[in-house]
Image 1 (spheres, helix red, strand yellow):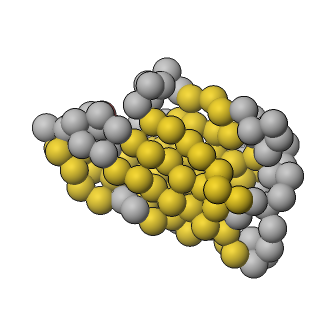
Image 2 (cartoon, rainbow, N blue to C red):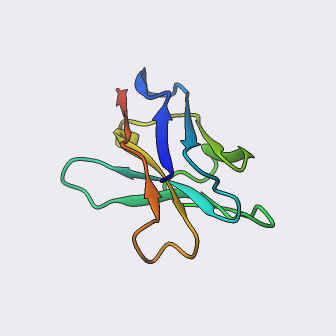
Length: 119
């Protein structure tokens, strides 16, 4: 069973940067699409960035476009570089993997890492 573990969350002031990492173990995510969700208290879950296995197309939510960058280092690791952070980026960030699209529950999801941005 594949397990995803996120790291790199923390607290930062507005305008700062953080880099989140996601590592898979227990199996391979070859051919899986991967992405990052976030969820803030009282808000719906948001898919902020995703990357297709091939050809590696990246898609971003409008709320983070131009500030966040998703990358996939290999079949089992992924990063999210977050720049120019805003207080509204405060949320728990989850990495996820899906064999198909993102309209259904991902096949795998991590436990999440907290990102807090103060003004």
